[in-house]
Image (cartoon, rainbow, N blue to C red; front, side, top):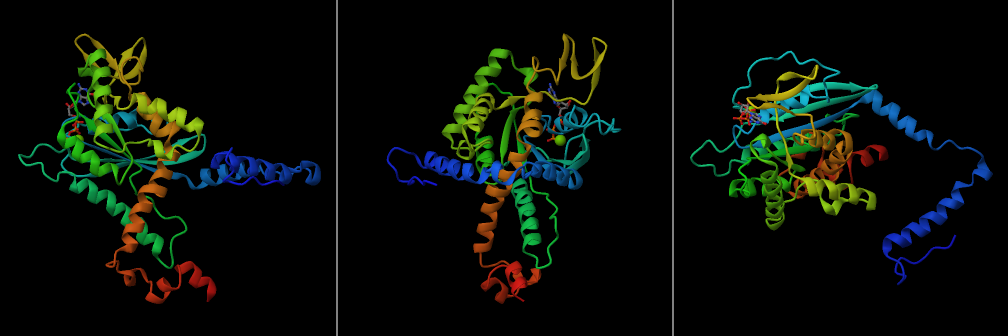
Length: 352
Ligand SMILES: Nc1nc2c(ncn2[C@@H]2O[C@H](COP(=O)(O)OP(=O)(O)OP(=O)(O)O)[C@@H](O)[C@H]2O)c(=O)[nH]1
Ligand SMILES: [Mg+2]
């Protein structure tokens, strides 16, 4: 096996790694030596495990009052995500949300179970003084990290830690057609540091096609000029393929969405839509709005990545900060100073 130095002038670090990796692989592959080993069966094993245990996915909706957050939560549950597996029987009128609350559904498709939780939050902007209106949201997100951290630090920790961390925060922007408002800039700046944000233009049915395009462009400029981190972040693109896919998403963000909880008959089919005097806006029709792009991003293409970014980046940042603070009360977790000084609880247990 010939290893090529990572500092070789003609190779970038990544290329050099690939070359050395390829050469090692061709050595190990040796199907002639061992015959069929069956390593690829690991995919089936992983699939079976995931099917058995299922997984959790938590989305939060945030934004000014009256932008259709609660309506979009219902749209999501009534749309194709869960239409097959659950029939929501709530037909009550959507009222103003006054406190943070979550709605969960077990969704099953081809044997894979997902517990989808949407956390609905009260809208801000109603008060005369909207200073620090992000605080309850930031507090909730951090509380979930804290809960997870405490479970993780327990000496007798659960095999599977319940995951209530927010994997994605959908931030609603009013369809003003102008630019980002200072309150949205301030809010998103803070949120972007602790959670993956996907901004959307709410009630997009109020914009013409040209207004929508121009507004989207201006929002993208404002997000960049204010240094607001939104999902998917360039820095975390893992390879060329992922970069190309994410670039397309970055170019079409923020998605212009329309929400509803009503169904209407269109050409003999039941569709989710908003009936107006001049026609029906079909929520799941890509020619009418971008709700299905949002849903595809959340469920079909980026669900796993959102979970990984939450765990590896946002939670990790929280964890490092918390463990560096001196006021963590480890005694309530059953950890003695000796355990902490001598490594993690797991290591100490195995030494005993
Ligand atoms: N035109 C239009 N109206 C919408 C849309 N989505 C919701 N609405 C309407 O907007 C109003 C407010 O909707 P909600 O879902 O209660 O808004 P919210 O953001 O949850 O409001 P808060 O709970 O006060 O924060 C309702 O009358 C909805 O029918 C939309 O996409 N387009
Ligand atoms: Mg609401």
